[in-house]
Image (cartoon, one colour):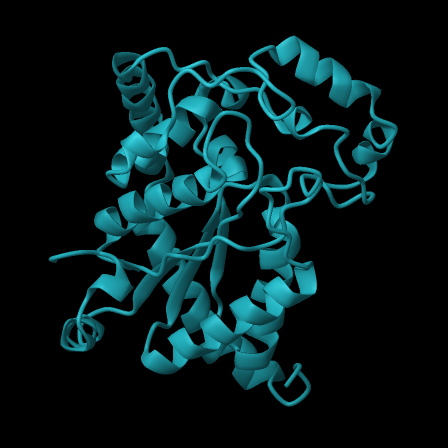
Length: 282
């Protein structure tokens, strides 16, 4: 195909695609303070994963979705905060439009910890209303499912930089950023401050960001960043990150995943609904 991104195709190209397939990947992003990296880095990583997966499965990608629930980072004035409810409603409308267009198989992809608070409830409510099963892949969790030996904390920054390379945007990643109230290169300092936050002991009672509302003390508390010393160093980080992304996509065996999604749909239509359709949610 000329491109996998739906918005870059013509209408005729989309209609031609839908004559033989019904698969689309929707990377859901965030715009938030992230140390020395651009505010959209976790959006970019989700889009990079979506593109790589779409190439493996002959799918399309609906991108440009960067404004959703950020979590504890609105203390950084670059962070755009969207409420969970509003984000859910927006995604639900997108999902309905895509279903109407003919995209029966929809896969929502994120690389942002608190994103599940928005996406998971939408997935379940949409299914009850339409009886069309759509899938959510939290790539942070999917890395565990891939059963690889990578240390997520160690590789995550490389993957973020690699995402920009996959989208041909590597020059958007700045070089030689000085430390300030938003940027720290000291992982021990960041982790120590997070451990001392009064919300930290409560986090064990639910999944990330789902136990208690809180804000970070400073923008730099969100994460430490790699000090990118030169263009060559940036390329090295990107190459390392692209390798990890490719390894994860390969390990997940995405053709089997999207086939399983189709089987869930068939089971719902042929088994669940005929038996229990009279009293299932409408």
